[in-house]
Amino acid sequence: MWKEEDNALYRKFQFKDFSEAFAFMTRVALAAEKMDHHPSWKNVYNSVEIWLNTHDAGDVVTDKDKKLAKKIDSLL
Image 1 (tube, rainbow, N blue to C red):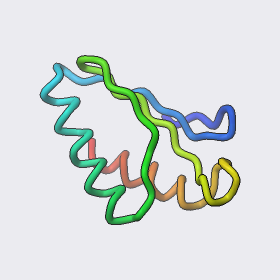
Image 2: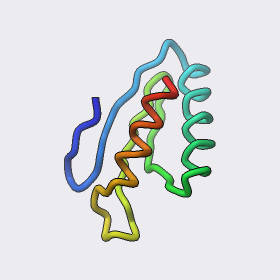
Image 3: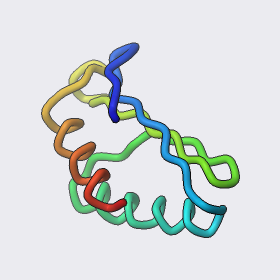
Image 4: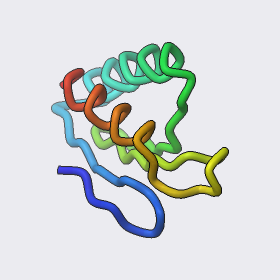
């Protein structure tokens, strides 16, 4: 579940292993590029953490972030 904190949407994802986590990151990267909206993220082995906010709007959460979060959820 996404949480709004510190002017960003945040979610942590857990996977079986690094390969699954990296495959997920690849799907997210392709979707984000199509939307021209790119996440801040961190990957350690089987976990992926994502933060979304809109830099052009002053680093706050906008509809653009909510749309990308919904798209990311659909990639699981």
